[in-house]
Image 1 (cartoon, protein in one colour):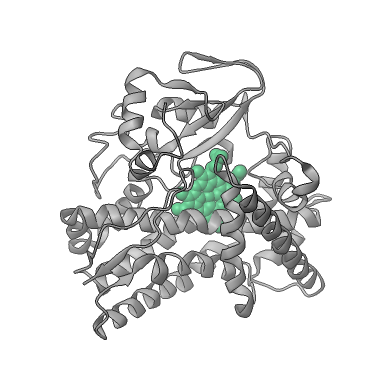
Image 2 (image 1 turned 60 degrees about the vertical axis):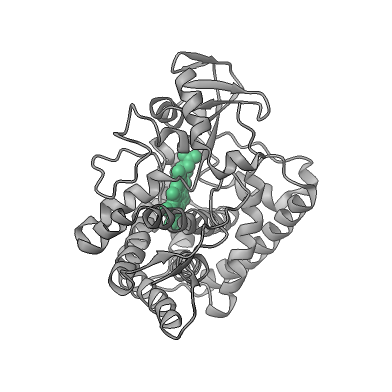
Length: 395
Ligand code: HEM
């Protein structure tokens, strides 16, 4: 069974997954203490089966993690029906009020100006630039900050808080990093309480926080904790994955220059190329569920109370679901990836995420068609959120 702390596994988990897939669709992972689903079909079942839920259990000791636990207890992502249905209806109602369309010109302009800045520095004689630091990181944070109208001066706070909190989703985390995650959660909550109070007293138009505060379904409204929890979820879900889809995806395209050339040659390829960036080297590798009763997944019995994980990276390389799954194909169609999930928790931000990654690709192909890798990038050591430390490019 694979070891999530083994650098060889984190560097390239796909051969490990291929071997597991040959032996079966679902396996017990003793080190993680959960079942892992490694085929596309089994992962799809894990995400959709209503007897497998996202059941939140407060992190213990509870007195050490009050803010972290509050954020997750109130999150759409961590709840099942009927609470999930209620939260999703209220949040989707606010989110659906034209916010993604409102953002379209800003996202396109921002991606274009970030890429233009990178190109200028290369033209000014710098031998290489880091695509992650220059483009992939700032874009999604700015977009979410803009969506929530976080004042410009405060935006630099968001990414460090979010980075510290999401470390908690890894396995075997160092106690000091756990403490930092809680401290960041507390600071994030305090900051957003201030922002929410401000929007409550002075609602704005074209403002998602104001719409969340006002969101109503009859007499039902989001509580203050729910509005705060939703804003933090949007900030974290909204940028951690997007940064790494751009990073991992551009690495895949640049390591296969003939694929990049297809994107350069034909702008119509951009949408399918983005789906392939989501599939090929998954930025989110694992999602957990808990069995609310005994359930069978791909022939394996999972007892009530046990946890099962969908390994999206493994699903995305399943030859039963994709032709030549280990090959990057920017024109791949159909591309039935699970990168945005499936079932009731399907990513609420998928249209925005697609818009962002498409805007980056469009800007890169027109402004820097000759982009190439300067050196093999360094990976981050985490497994669940898979990403690069940097991606040095020139062109
Ligand atoms: C390319 C970037 C993104 C990827 C790969 C991604 C992926 C996912 C996945 C796999 C899930 C389902 C988790 C599960 O089933 O347990 C999810 C849920 C969610 N995502 Fe995304 N996401 C991305 C971007 C975004 C953005 C930009 C936003 C918001 C602005 C967002 C907001 C959410 C929310 C709110 C949920 C929870 C939905 C629910 O539980 O009903 N995501 N995302």
